[in-house]
Length: 221
Ligand SMILES: *Cc1c(COP(=O)(O)O)cnc(C)c1O
Image (cartoon, rainbow, N blue to C red):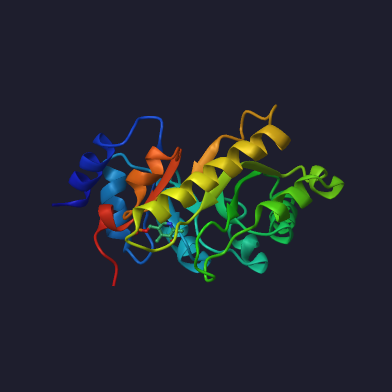
């Protein structure tokens, strides 16, 4: 089956109000153009260099999402075009994004990444760390970032119960933050969770954005 057919089949099976970020990392521009020509325009990358290269050579109306770990000194390369940064895992990074957003006169949309998995290797904030900076005057003074929700990655395991409980935890964190910090902010509404292997569980647990690569573009090497 071709990429176009993969998209059609996949989109038919997810609710209309869920946003699909098609993850294009390691895939060549021809693959992305195939999806683009079929009408699909929201793509995600996890490395800055690859993201910048693709953004420069592909059509300008593509909506690019940064889904991977982002180093502070690299924010400047994506600040003028990025649609959503999913992996904000420290206050220092949020401040760096704000600083670069000012330079390009934009308000950059971000998600706070939480560490919900058992693995140490995955990045993310704890709930306490997030609360600490969201309560601060320093955070309230940041005018060029807009926090639109939360993001997380579940443990890589066959055990569905583990995955489900981690997604449920992220949903709980979202609701708590909404209540305590974003009650009057209608833009705080996104829960980005679920990949090719676990998106069904993520949808059941309230995902509003799913990030899918291999199911659409085939396996990566
Ligand atoms: C690669 C990646 C995905 C997509 O993974 P698939 O298993 O190919 O769907 C989703 N989110 C992040 C953060 C990724 O790095």
